[in-house]
Image (tube, rainbow, N blue to C red):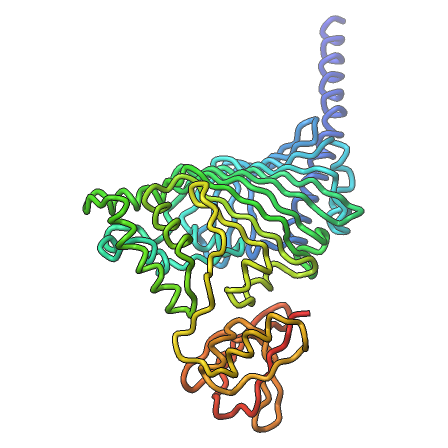
Length: 411
């Protein structure tokens, strides 16, 4: 009799455990559906893979042994875990449908722990940062070029991002913190306007603020330079400042004295740096790249601090490497006044150099019209960047084949 009761009790406990596990397994299934829907709906330009998934009673989703791949067998990054924290476990009910219809809870946090990457340049490009190693050599005296590491190092990092979503206003306020011993510590915030349109069309970023400290990679490069040459701060500045000015002039610009000096002093003792900018409402983040660089600061409200020194006006004036005719100078002045939607430009290299990055309409000798952004100009050709079908292309045109050129003002 007692043995029979024990068997019944044991079976009852097993059945009870199974019954109690069913709701948990249901929430796990819901969470997995939501994660997979997010990966499909917000493509990362690759595939996010994970070994297993858990949730707790507070609605926190944990992915373990995570890797992000993009067009190769080597992952862009690997992480021990990614935690996605909701405010309640009941937020997971119907999560797949809500993500597909772009309905998000008021607050979500994402915490990437113990991650590593050997493809930092590619990972940065995925986030919209195009790092060019050749430009890094301009940030140190020529004597040190053989000592500095131009390529971004292999990094280990942690990343935490908090999203505060205002569904009715379609705005997400984002705060983030990034920590890498090999690179730097970063923290900052920004807004995603038209948040539900990110990954489709129409989403844009504004109110960006970022601060960096513990600049390990820059500090190591500086120490390599100073260890070999024993340069004082004034000697370092004297060697570097003309080099920075030369880089600006090679690109038809002139840095202010304060900006060039502050950059040299910052690189000598790299401690902290910060930046703020405000994108014009309605303008997408990607459109900033097509502004002539001397218009960046005014149109984005760009502010940069290096070791707590605010640079103020970065570009003192717009300098041309070649002589520009008085008519081209007049064009530059007229571009500051909103008098007309279109301004005629002479078909010549000298005139076009003043408008790199501007939106142009070309009329060819065969009466074909092409609209795009001026990417590059030389003695015989111009290159025009066009945005079509959510992509872009750069097309060359011979100056001899162009009948007229009109600069179009931004709407």
